[in-house]
Image (cartoon, rainbow, N blue to C red; front, side, top):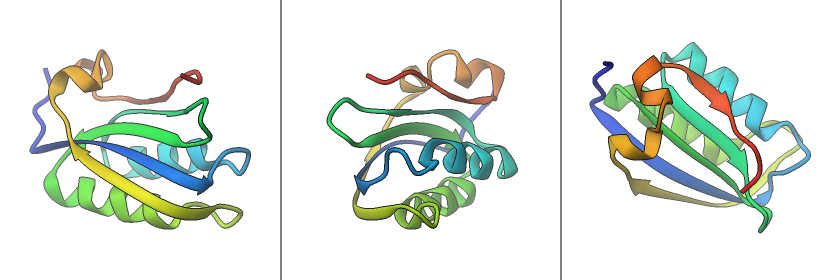
Length: 101
């Protein structure tokens, strides 16, 4: 079982779907050793839950604030989350893209 200093849920709104946002987040999460997941929401947002070291999680939040070059982030909401929000990714230490919710 992997231990995490910090776990957060983020919701990103703006032009964030159809611009490679999920792949962008996954690539940056994996580079930082962060576990979790990212998915599109039916309301046009992107949602992600991730856990890792405090500094890595803070860095990934900043990555989400800017997004890939084709994105236009209008708002980033960050909420504290718990291990249950990570689901199975918290056990494996991996990061994945999930289906739209």
